[in-house]
Length: 324
Image 1 (cartoon, one colour):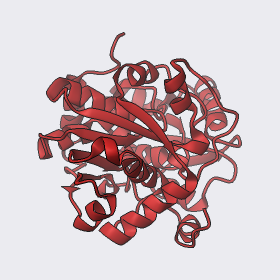
Image 2 (cartoon, helix red, strand yellow):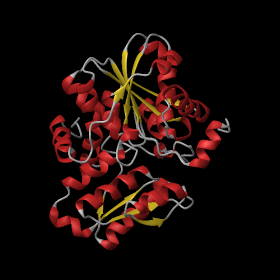
Image 3 (cartoon, one colour):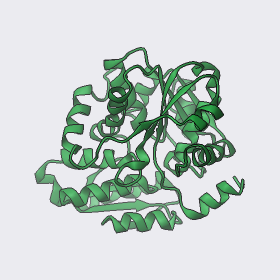
Image 4 (cartoon, one colour):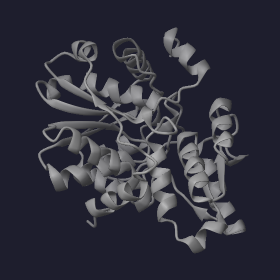
């Protein structure tokens, strides 16, 4: 298969973004490691310290800085549940590119407000991310804007890959990394970096069980879609695999697991109690996956991406009250 991106593209992306996104911390927490057990050295990559509190700031700025000058006046359009839209809107302000985001009806109002505050024009369409994406593609045809897909674009994936490049440089003797999958940009970025610089690193992926289309497709060896994607980890709420990332996921992942809503909520609570870090649902999925994989990760140096901290107040209340 043709691999979707190269290490060189990731390095170029980082060079373009360096003045706007400092290297994020990569830390160990004794209480967190004690809770995980199995003598795992767990290094947490703090993407919640990015300018929009999510690794999606990398994706958005990578896309914007690679956009040809001639295309910038056309504007950029995207579908999102929040983090991708915030990343694009923030990057659009830096690059002087207007951004329009499509969100599902009933999308979280706090996340909508954040996207607008960063400068996005917000339009509600569809009942979930996939239907919002259809509306965004219609907008491209009608208005001539440039589509910034949340995953299915080489520059988006290259942006996500910069966090794994940092992980390698910060801790070059990692044995494994665990990433969450909504579309696969984090996972493909990680596999691109480590297959070039440290091929022995195992890349594990995790998805919410209530939005498991890509997980199910990976285990089946073929693309499968689901009718719904209902999870509080809304950054992972996709209903189908993507053409640019799925073949690479098939070829390169060591394993792919799912976690329940309750397990993901437990991950959010553990981040808060053991590391004093506010984590969104997708990050909780990643930590819950580490707990599920402890026997396979025993005694290893493991990198874990805390993908973002954009959890809204009402969802956090439910997590803390064990209502999920």
